Length: 204
Image 1 (spheres, helix red, strand yellow):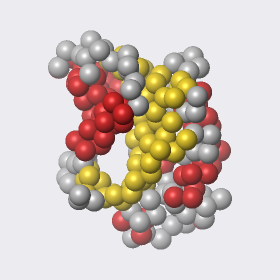
Image 2 (cartoon, helix red, strand yellow):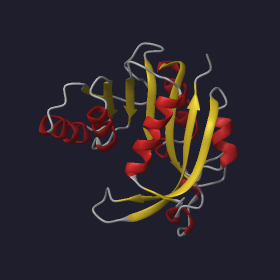
Image 3 (tube, helix red, strand yellow):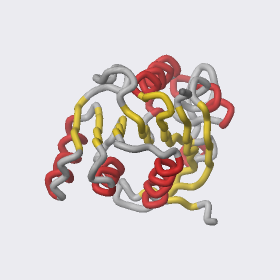
């Protein structure tokens, strides 16, 4: 099996995990949904799912809203908000996706964001998280300043080792932690990132 992944493979893996865990009446939250590529595809694939996308950027919310209207999705709601203070009750979602967001936070904010994910995820719910690894070209090919380096890891902010990920998500049951090169075309040109793909459960 090729190590090079793309968005199609991410989405198919998400739905395979949902089937494997026997989740029904899907309530899916995409934190840091950006332009909506993942959450729109998830809502389109499962028309019975209740899907939510949250992003701090009004521009990104508007972009996702445009996609939603274009394909007439009735099962997707979009909210402008912060991952550090999610506007939802406890244990309300059975799936949470956090793709290329946690890299933006320093130590304190990172732990706060993970605590919020844990809070809104119901027992036996699934977390899908994608983060950069230190093998990513953008980490390897740059000299980082002290201000850009996380105090605990001594790695640049946004790049995580396997042991760091397992420590950060110790309140979850890690089901799998995959490492691969991801083909990203989101900036208008194809390029690759080396990433970790975490699939974890909130213990029941």
